[in-house]
Length: 452
Image (cartoon, rainbow, N blue to C red; front, side, top):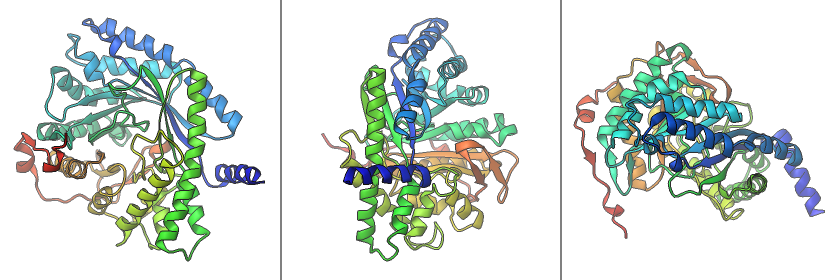
């Protein structure tokens, strides 16, 4: 009887509460593709990706049918291309991005991540070439995602990279201006990036990972909201318990899917990222969960406390359901990808500063936020620096995915489509940060980084 009840409950969560597996992501090492000849290297990359991920989509679809659990995205992450392409004599890495795009299309995945560089302490020649290739790469490909890790708790923050990424973001926005600067939706700037993240646009396959591995990212904000709706008078500790139990159920579904797909593909199962990942669909919003706790609108005073409790309860419930929890794991607050966040941004009840405060207690950072297209690159760099500092000091992953929408300003809206959603253009502080950003150098690691 208990088993029957669990089955019925899972079916209801899928049919009525937007429960899904947000992504299965195959990580593929490209270290054995390194070659001094760029063309040969790219051919090796294409061959390895298409060979390794040949059955990823078909097996994912098969599992969807067998288990009745939707898998929204099938994705690939690869070794940071700056590490792979650095051995070649190529001075521009756009061709590498095009190779990734072609391989992703061939195997049928939604996105491929790993057009990336890791530069918390400085740059190699390959790092600089990759970074300078990002705007054109994202403008000329469809499925390629890019990320830069420019800081960590151990290393501090590379402020030269911070300055550069503000400029790269602006260039990417300009080159994709005819699509509301959509290229920036595929570019993430990290502090403390993790090497087993299944979520785009920040996924890359770390050098400590197996040759191939399968990671899973679950979702389910709607399930959590419905669970809280049934307990209108619950105290905070009672709400935390409800969220924990709900996260446990969501995680078990993800664990089943991940291990089943990995077994079918005959590769190791990596991690389960139990982040609550919202979508623009009604009823699939993290903001609505916070409002269910008693806030009139997300962004009201109390929002940060509510989000802290939600994030912690999700982690506690999920970690009891799987021995392989990893990635980012928590609650995402992307503005354009969350129906509730979109509404609060339209109403003006949430600001960039409030979102920054919220990132102190959740995963991951300032995500999918549209800002005026004429925002100076130095202001974007300063926002990146602020967010990186939060990650560095608090020993957590933080990130920035800002979209300076070319030709648009406050009260306009950007239309990205699909899971990227709609973004009301938000105001930024008009004060000048250029002198600060242009100092360059490095912000040293905090004192508590010295642990060994």
